[in-house]
Amino acid sequence: MNLINKQRESRFRLGELFLETGIVDVSAVSEGLSIARRTSFPIGRVLVMTGWVDDHDINCALEVQNLLREGTIDKPLAKDLLRFSHLNKVDINEAFRLNGLSRSGDNPASRLAKLMLAAGVANEEILTRANREAKRLNQTLGSALVMLRVITPKTLDGALNLQIMLRDRKLTFPEALGFLKEMHERQVSLREVMGDHGKFLRANKMMPRIGEFLVSADMVNANHVLIACEIGTEEDNNIGRVLMSRGHISEEALETALQLQEMIVNRVISYRRAVKLMRLSQSLKAPIAQILEESQTLDQVFALLRRSGVVTERLVRDVACEIVDFEDTVAEAMLARGLINPVHARIGLACLERMHRGQITETKAAFVLHHCSTHAGRELEMFGRVNWKELGSVSVHQDLLSQ
Image 1: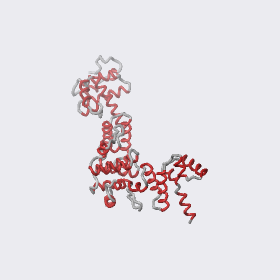
Image 2: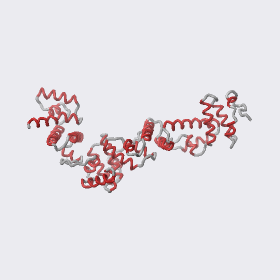
Image 3: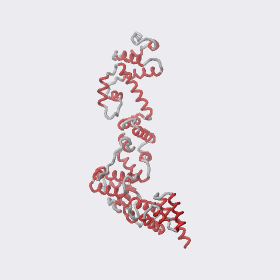
């Protein structure tokens, strides 16, 4: 029996618990053990003396150690409780309560359930019912709580944001509970509650969340993103990957969205421009690189139209003033408004191809465009009569067309 007890004690040493929870590092434990052997002091007392932990941490670690030896909790839960008590300076009983846990071991399975229970938004009976409905309808717990009208979609969205902020250590667990409780009671958004407390959700327009970006591009609906967010926070998984695994988006669409997200961050394009390109990529079934290449070609054709005088500078200025947040290039905006004749665009593209092959200069290409545009209704006919061989060797002021 003594051998069994010694084996149990060796598995749950204080130094190992502190090390595995990240409260101390390997060097601290190694140094502490060396000092403890020389002085015959317990390792816990040595860690306090060297400033790595305090008496509060030691008391919590001893209590967790006893619970482990009794078999009341397992090691992962022990580490979570010890880490929580260290970060929030609460005792183990309070750590149980604030995490929505009981010592009986009959605890909510999901993080969202623990948060709802600890904040008093839902009791164990309601959570049991919601879990049952979620399984029956193949939904998430959050969706079931909304369906049962225990919480609103706004409260669920706030709770999921709180979980992300907890994960990123942007607020403490007690703060999260207070915000969730106030959101639920006042039926307001997390942004409003945090603003009232002098804390603000800072929207980073340069780094849009992938879920919000996909909703803006009409790739998924907001409910799909909310469910994916809940699953992602529970599984520590990327929301985009969750959406893909549930069949809401393809792998190609996710890859395109991530590429555009990076371009926004690097200030290559604006958010609205990225949304438009995402829609174009999906509607044309083309990779974003091809869309961008064609867009650049369109800009080059547009420059040729401007130089030839087919598109006036005043018209360009007027259209440019109407573009909001640079979601379009001027060329795209003029095409969308029907201000560029498609025939002129086709002729411009053909001239551009000959320029790239070195057959004509930009000046001569602009002259051809201008000459063809002066024959309304006969542009393609006039273009077909251009003597390209002669055009490459004569001045643009001469007659370049075979009459």
